Amino acid sequence: MADEQGNGGEGAAGGTEHLNLKVKSPDGQEVFFKIKRSTKLEKLMNAYCNRLGQSQEGVRFLFDGERVHPHQTPEELGLEDGDVIDAMVQQVGGGGGGGYR
Image (tube, rainbow, N blue to C red; front, side):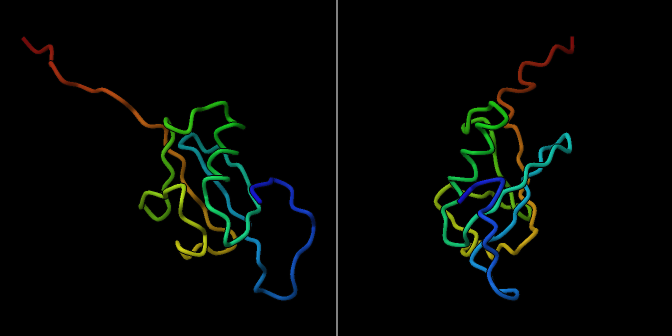
């Protein structure tokens, strides 16, 4: 589950069903999650956005530079214990129209 605090039930050596993942914002803020390998990352994304008071539409999640989608699982992405997912705030608009005259 996408809890910050697990139930303390670590499996036997190495091959546990749970992963400890870190979500890191551009300003360096880190939030830790314990999640099952088979759980859709949507749960982690929702929990992260709720904790920071952001809408999920405004945050993009990346792993190794590739976009992470809510329907994906850690298993599908090959995530390992201790991996970091980057959370980027989406910027809308931009420098159209200039102003150089």
